[in-house]
Image 1: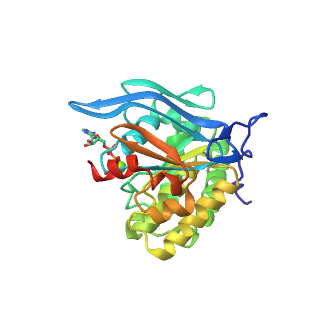
Image 2 (image 1 turned 135 degrees about the vertical axis):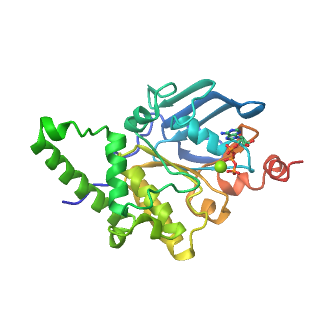
Image 3 (image 1 turned 45 degrees about the horizontal axis):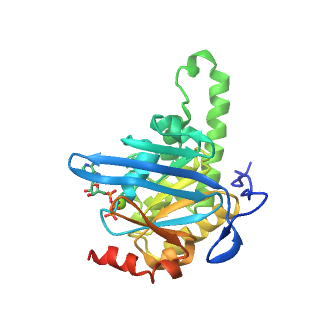
Length: 278
Ligand SMILES: Nc1ncnc2c1ncn2[C@@H]1O[C@H](COP(=O)(O)OP(=O)(O)OP(=O)(O)O)[C@@H](O)[C@H]1O
Ligand SMILES: [Mg+2]
């Protein structure tokens, strides 16, 4: 069996909206963040953050250190609850749901610092994650043992197919702690794919990745997007942003500063100012 990485094709509105800078249609927003706030003691990490991610896009999220990018991911994925504002995936309201419920609604994510279970194999990392995220329970071993092994078999096949798709199949039985930094990033992406997310939040996927693996990562992300998945991608590597992302959203001081194609965004004086901190 091969794992079908296709998702529903991106929808466009019947009368497409127009972007001021380009005549192409804008896709329907898939993820919508409205007025989200988050405070840590005296630090206002998100200050009324409003932005949306079009279905089928690879949207870049850039901005200086401390702008609130990772905090936004933590809030979207339910790792830390927002203090205020709304988060929607399509029409579904996500804020106030626990992290596992948000994952089941279709949000996958990777972490800025990969967090694999080092002593387990690459394959086991995917299976454990699936059990965790999909709410499989060991109780079924006693109530319906036949169904559990069929389910286990289905999960294993799916995990193998996903490892193929991110070019890690040859490392399926390697212990996760033996992987290079770049391979751990790919493992994180593979783990996120186990829950069949509609949108994947990638936190600095290119950091610490060697050029060869970077090619593989770019090809993988492109392939997944072509199959209908949506990405929101935090990145400081501007070559990777140039290559992959459209549009690019710039965050500064806890909210969106501007949005557009990277070629426009990078020339904007407000963006330069935010990066220089003047
Ligand atoms: N758990 C936390 N407790 C206290 N302060 C936090 C916490 N998480 C984030 N912050 C603060 O919130 C602000 C935003 O941090 P965040 O990590 O979201 O920035 P970022 O845009 O991801 O930066 P970078 O590009 O360096 O990863 C920073 O001032 C940070 O110190
Ligand atoms: Mg960060």
